[in-house]
Image (tube, rainbow, N blue to C red; front, top):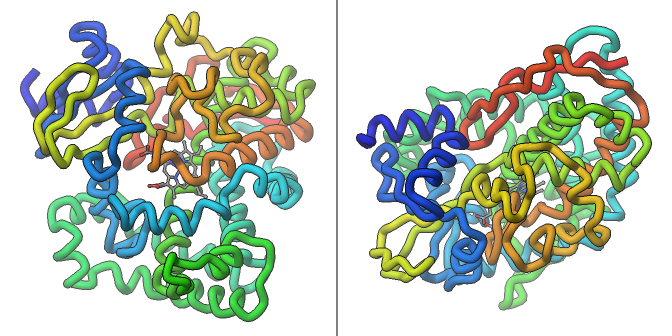
Length: 425
Ligand code: HEM
């Protein structure tokens, strides 16, 4: 296909486009998208393993996100590569360790219950904005350590305005066209960022004076290898990064799980009876069938051989989460939503850092892998488990329209087209 046609197909419907290419060309094929270098898509878990366990000095991921630098800031772990990336990642990792997440369970359940109590019953509604409100509150309380109060209400409002301004399509197009350097020099986003940053710096000062058990307080204790603490700028950049990486992604996974469960015969009843164990299995199955991010990308810094292919420097290799998750030999009847697949697993492989149905096999990779694996994976799975179980406990839910919701692109995440429409009772 000509490049413009590939660009349109990739942008509009990446999943079906990848499936079609795989059928025609096999488990490795090249896409030509926009002004990007060639993307070599990889659909086999063995090839994906080669990428995720390959030398991070040669496989850069930060480059792909550089467009977000004016917003996330230069210290953001999402933007760095090589030694700098590992240094920053090490500072954040302990705060997101699986074992720590259990301690946040009650706080998340409490937030979910407060929100659910206000939702209308007996009329069609979209879960998407409501799930986003929950996941935003979770970030503000668990990560930023904000108590319910004036500052937290004000920050929520300022964040909403900032996201509208920066994450809107015109702004994204401008970012792509102008590039991060020019945007930073011109200070275009400063007016949108300043009100948010001011509250974040206030919060950092307050937590430094009176630490709590939130992630920010842990980061204030973290030390670089030379013994120095993180600067206020670094803390600000990582807080914004965690918010950007953790809030809509988790809300989207919650929406897809609900969207699938209400269309599965007996699905909602199983959630109601199965509690958190079933909730986790359903969340994992939704992340398999409707991964929030369909691919991750790595830019080759030197020629490499991957999956037996000699690839030149500059190539982008793209482990396809979507295609790996639809392999029939791993997941029989791959297009069917069957949470039971994840019920027979030992308690919680992914939350212990494993990679899915069979640990170490790279067959379940909604959080990517290797040194770039999602820092918030255990956090997100805890949140899915707890919020879904609360939903099941409090409510009955039914689909408004029995037809499945289409998948729509929202910047880089893949969301249900009608925002997971349900009637609650
Ligand atoms: C269901 C929800 C989520 C999904 C599907 C998801 C998915 C991902 C994926 C695919 C990556 C890239 C991995 C790679 O390139 O190999 C990633 C990275 C990341 N995620 Fe998540 N994520 C979720 C929730 C969260 C949460 C809740 C947080 C934080 C609170 C978070 C923080 C991050 C960070 C900081 C990175 C960058 C890691 C690095 O570059 O070293 N994510 N996530």
